[in-house]
Image 1 (cartoon, rainbow, N blue to C red):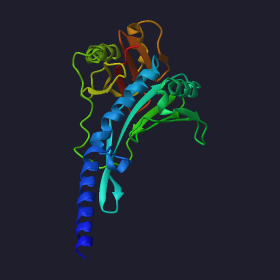
Image 2 (cartoon, rainbow, N blue to C red):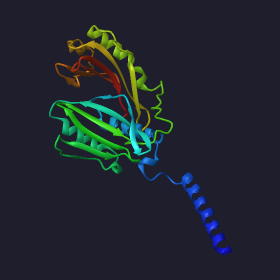
Image 3 (spheres, helix red, strand yellow):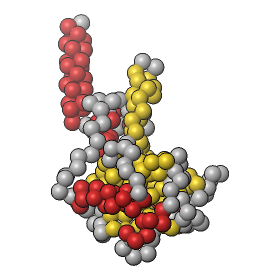
Image 4 (cartoon, helix red, strand yellow):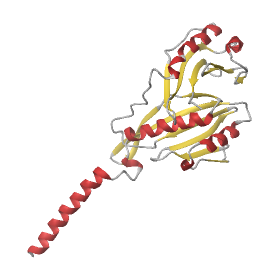
Length: 264
């Protein structure tokens, strides 16, 4: 019948129009529809919120990791972006850090700390299907992460931009002073890692290798402005102006970092 054919054609045209409009105007509704490019800024902002929540403890932003090869569908590969923040505290204070951070994160993240088989764990939802977690990795060490889960790559993860005029850009001379105090030279090029702060500005860590461990960290004590943040045989952290300098000799290589946080 001619009218049935006309109705079928009209329905097909309407369906195509609705599909086109939805693709242009509707936000993605599942993680697999959001690319790594779209999720990257959400992860960056999550790290800034974590830095602000950690506050005055000794912390280090770790380099972003993009792992390719996860499976979106049997026919399509994807990638996962993970960003991390390591916090060092006196042993026994790990759960207090997790709970303090959970209390300071945005209310709509629904952050909470629960006991698990491997110890207390923080879980939160930063939105856009970005998961935030915090866990104890060893005595006195807590790691916070934000990750995208498996996503289409899109244009890739460009990383956060850094304004060279921010206070974090001034931490390199602090590292030079710490290296001289240890009698060491940088064994690697400085690696800057940054995250946007919730209220504006940029949190930043710059890290270098300071040669083989062990090394006596007592030479750093005259550089501290006030009492040390962490003072252990293999780990020492102190404040120098707006930066927190951390020397970590627990690995094969001494890692030296200077981090500048978010405005109070």
